[in-house]
Length: 311
Image 1 (cartoon, rainbow, N blue to C red):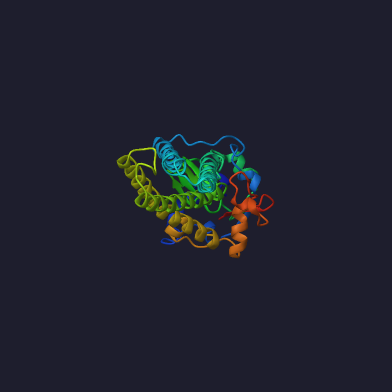
Image 2: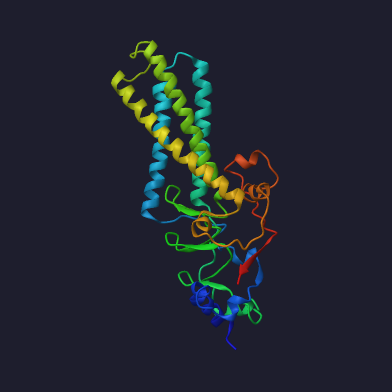
């Protein structure tokens, strides 16, 4: 009789052939092996997480620079030269709050372990410690040599298997997975709101300048003011559309409890179906509160629950 290690390798090699040629008896007798979440929690979960990817780092820097550019135009072109003090205070406070929350969400999404599976834990000793019964197998990722839990996928950029991986986003230089999806959703929401607010202020500023003298509505020259406002308008419109679409797809993915990769691959649902509200609470925390909208609050992703390996 083969050892657990051999059974693990057989499944890995024959996983794609199970539907075409019959496969092994292990694949036909599907069972679930409950494994505590502590077993598959990455050792770096409490440490700083940062992906050293050149493209991702450049995209993340560009994201911050674009937000800072919007901050510069809003403050020094539109609000500070305004004669209406209350208008400047209200809009300045609102815009800076949204921009701060957007950047804080971006930082949390980038520096939070998305749910990486411990690398190299598919050893003979570890698999034997699972005490697998005859016919039971576990999936092994040949790329990072780790035991692959249910709904985990390997990311070629992070070079790790990520639990409930939705996609790898270069703008946050990280995968969007089980542990940081909340921060990514908040990032897209706050960027969309910041862009919308900036667009509204640009429209009002253009109307104000058309009615008044252009030399009095800004501390910059009229040509420079127009160029800065047009660039901000283009940036705001572009990111409003992009982040709104991303926000909608992420909320839909959460409500249906199906990641982007699972939808793309049309994977068969092997996990329990829950209500949309339960799925939202699983990502943002329980119960519903204002902390759902805070990037500084770490949600409880069901630490008391157990995870299962599909075999």
